[in-house]
Length: 113
Image (cartoon, rainbow, N blue to C red; front, top):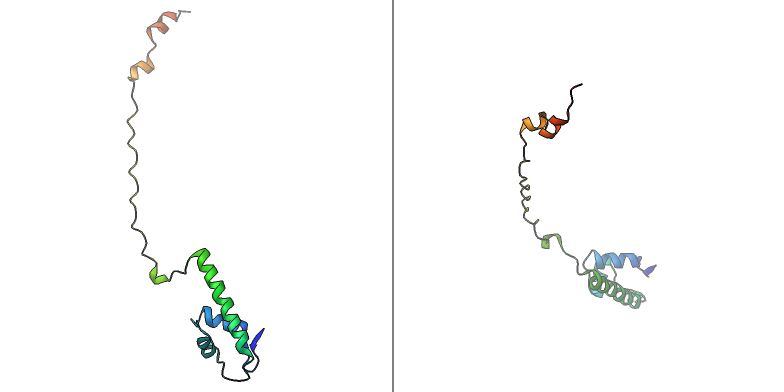
């Protein structure tokens, strides 16, 4: 919708000037959007729109917190070294002969056929 028909300024133009252009007052918005003294019918709508944008911005800041500029973001956290692998004890080894030779009980149960 048009805010100023005399100069062809829309609501989107005003919102853009406030959110991306840094305009915070009616004077700033008028200068950024190119509004010059004319019939004056846009003044009331302009003040209402500025109030809406400020209220919405304050609500977003209250919910999500203020925007953080890239220069305010700290550098990446220092790298945390990887934990050392767990030391596993070597598996117990049984004598090879025990695996290959039958136990005394097994030796007695073997019958000659």
